[in-house]
Amino acid sequence: MTTETIAQPTTVDRIRAMMVRHGLNQPQTEKLLGVAHGTLGNWLTGTRQPNQVVSTLVGVLEEAEVFYPGLFRDRLGRATTKA
Image (cartoon, rainbow, N blue to C red):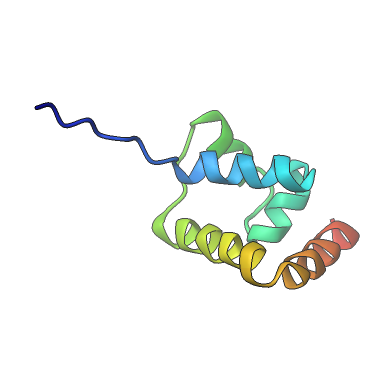
């Protein structure tokens, strides 16, 4: 019997998926995550990796999408109007 390991999506994969689901560009996503300009680009290109705090935040945003999508939409509205 062989045991196969199923690869879990990385934090960057989860961020990319969130960007696609909500039609977000990099500045909007940076604002949503509260990171400095260019930080997301470094993650997306693999120059740097997000830390555990970012991973936790992405998880909270994913849960918010499921349990209270209005809250997430409201947060996105603020992110897009101030970007």
